[in-house]
Image (cartoon, rainbow, N blue to C red; front, side, top):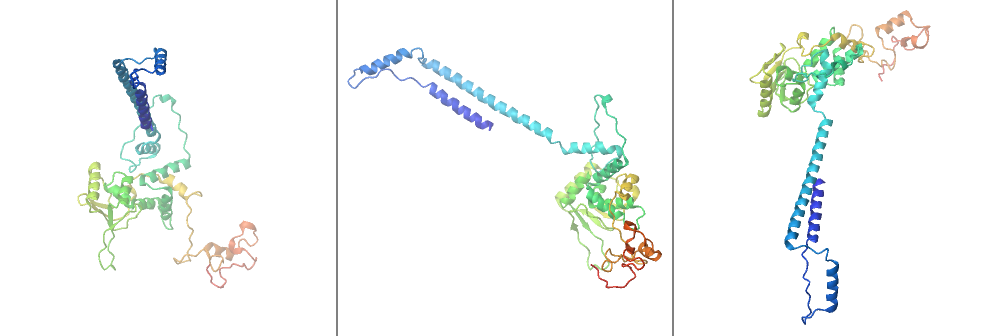
Length: 390
């Protein structure tokens, strides 16, 4: 819009200049016979007497004033253009201040979470400390509650492995299955078996976000271990899912393309030699590795406080676990809807049926296996009926 206004102003100024500095016509007018017309001559004399004070200057003075006017108009146009450029520059500065960079966001996250432990895979740049101009004006830090400490610990794990809360909850539910003695160790082993974490641990990606980018851009391939019933060796498969969990014996390599190989080698040269954990193998020259075993609890990429992490996962406000009961002495689960709606023959229900607990109780105190008649409950699991499963 600024350049349109400048062009319009220049056109108007040039038009005014052309109208103002038109050369005057000659005052001598004669008829065909060489005699001046009387009426026209009188009118010309009157006009010349009235407009004597507004008479145009000579040719030299008119040319000088015209050049001066052109210079002034050009200076005005330059001033308009400069002002528009300054406004545009100020607008760009304001936009830069409104939208902070990604590096600033990572620094804020590190400044908030690193007092409770490092986040190695979040950023390879060091934390920049703020200089307090007036240290005496710093506000005292409140004492953190156990729930707040759990939130910080969960955020550290989430930022390190570059996952969201929903993914972390899914891994927690898998780690807290029946028969797990140390669920946090199993949780960390699951997180360490992700394909993007493998790329970061062997050094072909500087951060977990860069490892996710490499997987998403089809730079990584895997090959599963051959099984006895396979009639041929498995082939290399390109993986573009960062949450892919590796199995024991899987081989991982960088895709044999110039772009993929160059990206991985550049990252290796920038970071230098990396300490690879014992359960992984990696060849820096050929860019190929292997996943041999689960990660040991002492070699996890991030230090985790188990007490704060497990307290909320196991508490009444923790994750909702699936309650599965098995028939005694078997691995067959007892389904929720049993015998068309009868009570399930779980150990506690059978014990209540034998002892007769809750026969005289009312309301929610009566167990579900004793609802109905007092002496012969209607939903007895020992009664035989039509085995209909809804």
